[in-house]
Structures are given as structure tokens and as C-alpha cells.
Image: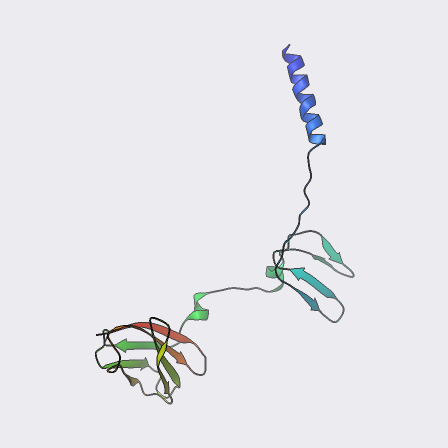
Length: 164
């Protein structure tokens, strides 16, 4: 009896595997690119899965191969301010001091925004000294965002400033 149950179960499994559905890989991509070189053209989409090979005189596998072509590394170094900038006093009442360590003579741009994103102050600091002043005496009490950008490198640093 047990033997016939095992044989029937084995037969059912074997037959069901023969009727299993097969799925092909598809891509719904919203972007892509075509790159044309001296002797080849390559078209691809963002999110493309590995689906085959492109071959002519050499072979290239399709799919997620960006890392094999370009070594792309993101690090915090790409987003840091190269110089040391300090602001004081914070909270401020009348004048905010900007101190640029070892940066005398550089060009900077200081922009102050309120919390609604409205620009309330823009000051070009051309050939800056180590210490610069921003006048906050006309601002109402509240929180402001100060963005300092170095003109040559376009790198910036942002501070939250409290006006009393």
C-alpha cells in the first residue's frame, strides 16, 4: 500500500513539473541611452537584467555592467567643504562673525534664507579677510539658514542660525 502511494505521488510530481509555467525576464524602464563608438553601438535601459550577449569581434554581456565599465565611488569627500569655516555667536543679536581658517584672500558668497526658503540676505565676500561680519540687526527673531559657498570650487557649508 505504501509503495503504491509513493509511486502515485512520484507520478503526480513528475507530471506537474512538465506543465510548470516558465517566465521570461522583462524590463519596464523609464530611461536608457545609446552609446556610439568608432566601431560599435550599444543601447541599454536603466534597470536592465542580464539577458544575453552582444557579440561581434568581442563579446559584451548585457545587463547590470556599469560597474565593470566605470568605477563609481561615492564618498563624503565629494560633499565636504575644503576649508574650516566657523560662525559665532549663535544665537546672534546684531552681527554674526564668519571666521575662515587659513582662507584670507579667497572669494565667498554668503546667502541667508528664512525658514520659508526666501532669500533675505546675499553678500559677496571678495578677497575676504579671515573675519567677516553679517548684519542680522534688521532681521526678526527666528531661525535662519546660512549658506557659505566658495566661489572657485562651488563647495559650500550650511549653518542653522538663531536670531534673538
